[in-house]
Amino acid sequence: MTAADTYYDSLETRDEDQRNQEQFHALADQISHAKSNSTYFAEILDGVDANSINDFKALSALPVTRKSDLIAQQKKSPPFGGLNAEPVDKLANIFMSPGPIYEPGQEVKDYFRMGRAMWAAGFRPGDLVHNTFSYHMTPAGMMMESGARAVGCPVFPAGVGNTEMQLQAISELRPKAYVGTPSFLRILLEKGQEADLDMSSITQASVGGEALPPSLRSTLIDLGMQSVVQSYGTADVGLIAYESDAMEGMIIDEGVIVEIVRPGTGDPVAPGEVGEVLVTCFNKTYPLIRFATGDMSAILEGQSPCGRTNARIKGWMGRADQRAKVKGMFVDPSQVAAVHKRHDEIQKVRLVVSSDNNVDAMTLKCEMRTVANDQLKAAIEESIQNLCKVRGSVEFVAAGSLANDGMVIDDVRTYE
View 1 (cartoon, rainbow, N blue to C red):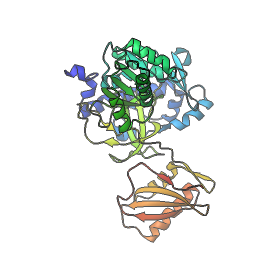
View 2: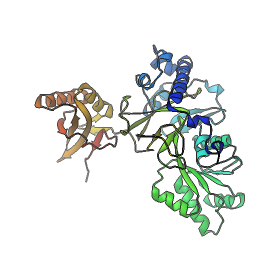
View 3: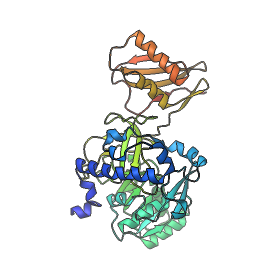
View 4: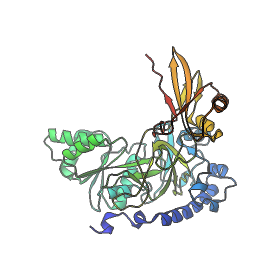
C-alpha cells in the first residue's frame, strides 16, 4: 500500500515544527477574522495582537469559551450568542443540539472535517456508506455525510430507527461502510442474522457518539466486521480526533489545535495528565477559539505506529463538570483551581466532599512541592473559605498519591 493510499493527505505526516509553524500562522489570521466578524470574539479578544499568538504558551493566555456558557450567550444574543462570523442569511443550515444550543452550518466541502476520520477507517472512493446518525435537527447525520462525500463515497441516509427497513436496504444495496453508534451496528448485525438477511457487505465502520469498549469491538469483529474504529467530535467544532488501524489512542485532527487544561480553568496540565479538552478551530463561519468541550482526556506520549505524526489523546475519559453543592453553596472546579493557584507550594489538589450524619464536609487533599507545616495548612484553609465560600479542611498527602484521572472535586456522599 502506498502513502497515497494510507494517508488522507500530506498534512498527516508533517513534522512537529512544521505543523506548529503552519497552524499558528493560520491562527493569527483566524483571530483577526474572528475579531473583525464576530461580536463575541471582538469583545473577549479586545486588545489581543493576533500576530503575538504564535505558540501554545501565548495561546494559553487567551480567554476560554465554555460549551456550558453557550446557552446563556445565545439567549442573550440569539441565535449564536455573537460567536458566528457570518450572518444568518448567508448560512446553509442551522442545527440544534440538546440545551438547546444552536450551531451554524455552511455549504463548504467537508465543513466538519470528518473525511479524515473516514479515510483512516478504511473508507475509499466509491464505497457505499450506510449512515445511521440522525438528520433531524442535529448536525450528526449531515456531519458524517459531508465527510463521506469528501472521501468520494455515496451515502445512504438511513438515520435512526426503522430497523427492519434498514436491514432490507443493507441486504439489497450492499453497502461496504457503516457510520453510527457501535451499539446500533451490533443491533443491525444481530437482527440481520436472526432474519436470515445477508449483512456481510459491511466490513468497515467509523463509529462515535458513545463509548466503544474492547468487548463490544470484539463482538462486532466476531459478527463479521473487518475494522471498527472510533472518531471523536462535537457538534460545535466537528472532528477533534480519530483512531487509525493502529488503535493506539486517537490522533488529533489537522484542522484543530487541542489543549488539555485543568478543569474549570484555561491552565495547561503537565504532559500525560488528565484534563479538559480545549479546541481551537479554523472554521471561518464559527471561529471557536479555546473552546472548552467539557470532555476529559490526556495527551499520549510519542506518535502513532500508523505513521501519522500529530499528537494523540487517550480518547473520551468522562466529563469535566464536577460541580458540587456543599452546605447549600455550589463549589466549582474553577474555585478549587483558584485555591491551588494562590499557593505555589501546592503541586496537585483534589477536593473530597463527604457527609457525616447528613452534615457536609470538604477536605482539600494536597500534594506539595515543599515541606508542609501548620502555618501553611491554616493559610490554605483560609483560601478555601474565601474563594469557595464554604469552610474546608486541608490534608497533606504523599506525592503521586492522587490519581491521574482529572478529578478536581470528588463527591463521595451517598444517599440512602
